[in-house]
Image 1 (tube, helix red, strand yellow):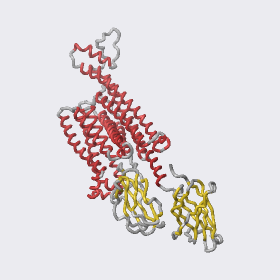
Image 2 (tube, helix red, strand yellow):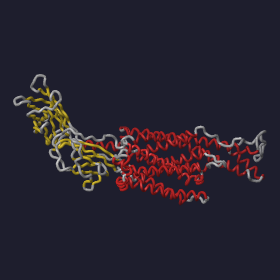
Image 3 (tube, helix red, strand yellow):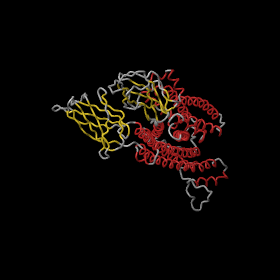
Image 4 (tube, one colour):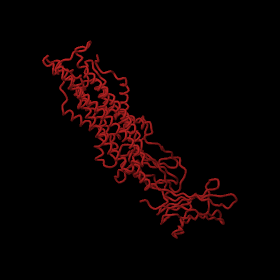
Length: 638
C-alpha cells in the first residue's frame, strides 16, 4: 500500500541549488560596487606645469564625497608629504576637497593621491601629477589598483554578501509564517531557518561596522578595533545605517521569542502582527537603500523606496522558496505535512513578489542605463539584455509551479471530503462514494446504482478507496518540488548574470565619465621632428607638445634630444605656426628657455584645422636649422 511520497533522490541537490541561489542573489544584489562619483576637475590640472607654486590643491567630484584625515596627500619629488593639514570642503560644497600646501615648494613634479567615499558608500581613489617650475623625476609611488582590491575590501565584500543572505532568509521565512501558514512557526526546520537568518545578518552587520573604517581608508585589518576610527564610522551615514540595523535586529529577537510563545500557546497570529512584520522588514531594507546606490544619482526620492521594495521582494521570493522546499521535503512522525492551501497562498505571494522584482528591476536598470541606445552600444546594456531573457525563463518556470500548485489545491478538497465522509454514519455512504468518483474513480458499471459500492477486487483492503486521491496528491507534490528546483536553477542563472552586470560600469555613469573626461582632462598633441645637428651622422629630434591642442589658449613645451636619446642644450629654439589654407600666421609661440626645456603658456590659436609648425633650432652660435611638420588643432567641445 502506498503510504507517502517517495523521497526524491535529487533533494540534496535541490537544497544546494537554493542555497547557491541565495549567494548568487547576494553577489548580484550587493555587488553593484561601481561608485557613481568621479573626479570632474582639479586645480592644478593633471599634468600642468606651473610658473609659481600653488597655495592649495582642490579636487571637484561629480557627486558629494566624504573623506578622512589622509584622504588627500600631496607628495614632493622626494616622496615627502607637503600638505600639513587634512582636507576640507570648499565653501560648504560637498562635492569638493581642498588641502593647503606648505609655504615654499621646490621645483619639480608633485603627486596628488586621493581616496574619498562617494555618496553611495563606496570608496574611490586616484592620483595625478603637476609640476612646479619644471617637470622632474619623482620617488612618489601610489597604489593604482581597485579600491576594493585589498584584504579588507575583499573581506568587506564577503560580509556584505552574507548580510544579504541573512536578509533573504529572515524576511522570506517570516513572511511564509505570517502570510501563508502560521503553524509553520512550530516546525523545527523553519524555526532554525529564522534563527539562521537572524544570526547571519547580525554577525555580518557587527563585522561590517568594525571594518567600515579600514575599508574607507585602505587601512590594515588590525585597525578595525581602533576607537578613533570606529568613532568616525559611527558619525557617517553608512555607519549610522549599520547601527540602526543592529537596533532593529535586537527588536526582532524579542519579537521572534514573543511570536514563538504565542504560537506554542495556540493563540494564533493576527493581522496586526503581519503589519508589524511588514513595517519591520521595510525599516530593515531602508538601512541598505538609504546608504548605498539608491541614495546617490538621479531621482533619489523615488530610487530609495524602489530599492526598498526590490529588497523586500527578493527576500519574500527567495527566502520563502527555501522555506517551502524545507516543508515539502518534511513529513513529521504524525504524518502531518504542509496543506495545499498554504502552498496556494505562497504561490500567490511569490507571484506578486516576482512581479515587484521585475518592475523595480526595470526602473533600476533604466536608472543605470539611461537610454535605449545604450542597451546595444554599451557592455552594461548588452549584459542587461541577457539578464532580461533569463528573467523571462524564470517567469515561465514560475507559471508551471503555479499550475502544479493549482492541481494540488484542486485535489486536496475532494480528498479531504472523502476522509471526512469515512467518519459519517452508514446512511451517508452514497454521498461518500460519489465524492470519491469525482476525483478520478472509475465510472460505475452499467446497471450499478450511482450510490452503490462496487465489488472490491480480491486482495484489496477496505480502506483502499481513498488511495487514488492520495497517490495523485503525492504525485502533484513531487511535480511541484521539481518545478521549484527548476525555478531555483533558473534563478541562479539570472543572478549569475546579475553578478556580471554589477561588475560592469553602468552605461549612464560611463557616459557621464566620458563627458567629464572630454571637458576636464586636457588632451595633448605631440609632434616629434628630426633635424640635422650640423655634424656627420648626428641627427637630433625636437619634441613639441601642445596642451590641450584645441582652439584657444594652449601650453607649448619643447624638448630637444641628442641622437642617443639624451637631453640636448641648444642656445636658441623658435616656434611659429601658420595655417596656409586660411592665410593665418605666422604666430610666434615666444618660447622661453626654462633650463632644460623650452615653454610658453599663452599661445592662442584662433581656428581649428591643420597648422604648420616652423621650428628653428640653433645648435651653435653660427649654425641653425629650420624644420617643419603639421599638427591638427580641434575645435572646442560642445
